[in-house]
Length: 324
Image (cartoon, rainbow, N blue to C red; front, side, top):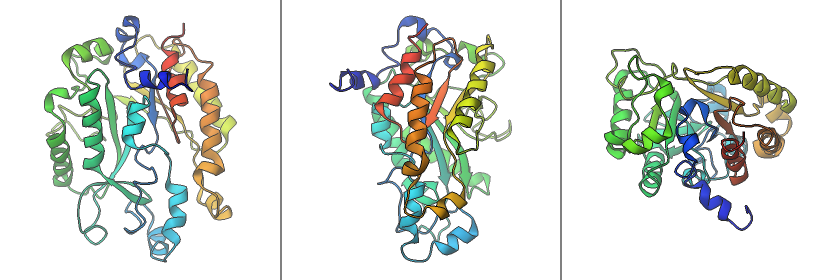
């Protein structure tokens, strides 16, 4: 059915179409497709702006040499689909690294996503999410702002949050778990009935922070990093995670399975004409797909992320929810 395209149509509303049994499970116990460095697709990353402020000073210096940024871009691209395409193809967890660029890097001064190069303005990404959810209100999207660069003052964070809240409506935000609302009570059935479809995650800011009441934090999600470019090792790492997690009756956090190979600077230097995609990521994502095809709904699979996600990747994950 993939080829004829009808399988993909379902992916845009897979949460809406999930059987009731799945909708009644806590969101910690359903399998959810996600993407790694979600915004790092080709048309997003800029070679006209300087190397971004998430990079080392030495990389930023080298980056001022003409031509170097185009080379870096081949290794900085992690996705082939835009945010809108990812959402339409079933991705529901977005991994964002957000930068507040110094004035000299970007006279525009808007918040941008970053991965060695400056990417799309944050606002553009949040608008894509909002537009998608207007068409598909029963889907729930997790936006994880898990790295923030250049956020040296609270005022900068407040500024970013206000920017986002101008685009999203407060009523669509899923409020974070607390003493009276344990995470095991969060089900798609309840969220869909309440019209809540955005979960905002950010680094933990302290209880007195003005946004603590609407932001989920690192206390609500675990994301163990395999930190390797060896595919068998990464699969073994994910197996161990699954074995541990399937034993938990009531997980008290979300869990991210990182199906991601991390390359070292040395590998990049030794393969200057390759790209992240050709060097390791395409085969990593293929391996993760075949690993996923062997999992069932009892295996403790929750959020799964990869580079270069595709409809097939999403389908393998959403199918897990239907497999006993």
